[in-house]
Image (cartoon, rainbow, N blue to C red):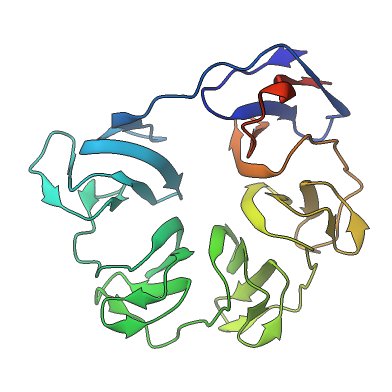
Length: 281
């Protein structure tokens, strides 16, 4: 049994594949603090140090890029020259530079992924520079321009995850390219087509995390793929079949991440009565 304490939100720990029940106890600490300096660990080489002149409120990382958002107007990497930005910065972890060639977005950026020379930026925006491109924008990292092929969605994209050559999306949307995909779906990047996978959730998907051939999905839903799953579910890959795993979760899931063989779950609740959530394995 393990307790995880976190400022501002509640986190609990699943040992992947063997989690059984969750219960509530203890107390919650006061709202958390923010930081203007973050250290991003890499598999090889020294950590990437990102500094801003305000507050960092959220961080989303893919294997190559990291999106840092908050309230700030300049950002620098590894103590270098400050770069002017507008509350969001995308850092290339390979080159350790800020992608300052990106145009302005008129709304929040929530996540980023990459595949070959394509960069996928997801969020709650409708304009990218002078172009109307709602919720998902695809850039060519070579030309530094929007690609000719863009994908149309009808609601915010909260989270992205790559599986081989498939981009998996979760969010507020109900359609991808006019095909019904309730809050969750996939795009074959090789074929530039929407996949046939159509699990359907009855409310928003806020976060996706993958551990090898298991896809974890968290959000505000209570049913998914036609089955009862309260806020958290998992799918087998590549089949896309819903697993039997059905944990008991106290409130909607805000964010998922994988760390050293464990699934970290942040709950989107500020209710002090929830206490500190624990996992029994």
